[in-house]
Length: 97
Length: 220
Image 1: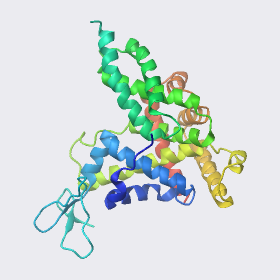
Image 2: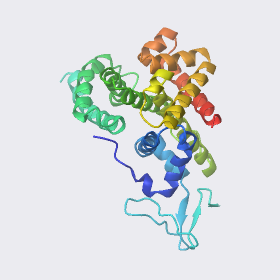
Image 3: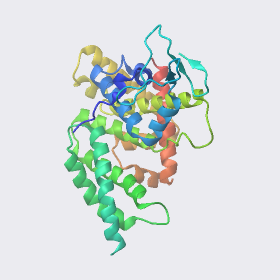
């Protein structure tokens, strides 16, 4: 049994958080080790209660003009394509990104 | 029915949950059933030391089972790469225990939550990198590593950076990290030896990980 891939690879915002965390080690560890670190971080964010709550609180809310949050089949927020009318707003109500 | 029997029954569910979670993190060299077996054996001892005045049984058993399983898996793990990954996961798990519930301590702004998430991921990455570096602490271990000459050099550099950063840590933090991850001594035994509580040792551990992470990031 091994760590299952979480949906972080299908979630650009989450992937960006993990990419930033492993970036300092990219040229100093092997590709395999970096991939392993990514899997571990994704698992932590998905499975640890405090970490997953933090992800939910930190994640910008993506809405289109109707105010609807766009979510994929797994419940993850879908990022807007470039140039669309969809915007992301933070929890404080300010536009982000 | 005896309370111990009830606790064993309750503990079996905790064993399954902890074993499943650790199997996902530790990887393919240890089977889920093996982890369950270690957990079941440890559970008997855990029911005997449980103090109802201090916490719920599930919380106590979850904590104790996790570290009992880690300690046993560590004894069984001899391959260098697997041993390093195990150290990395242990460092990550130890650090996670100190992470507060984000909803405690008042409402944060979006930026506040983002900043805490960034900090958590930086520290977690540092814990993993530190653990991975424990298999290559000197030129000999780096020299027989697999990979291109560039990769071997880069790995030796990470190991040297970690060792250098370790030297800069305050005495007790350095001793704790060195003895636990390089000397493979049980965490609780080191805390006792240092004359500090387990919770204080955990705080020193978290501080050491944060300092090591900053040193590693500054070395880019």
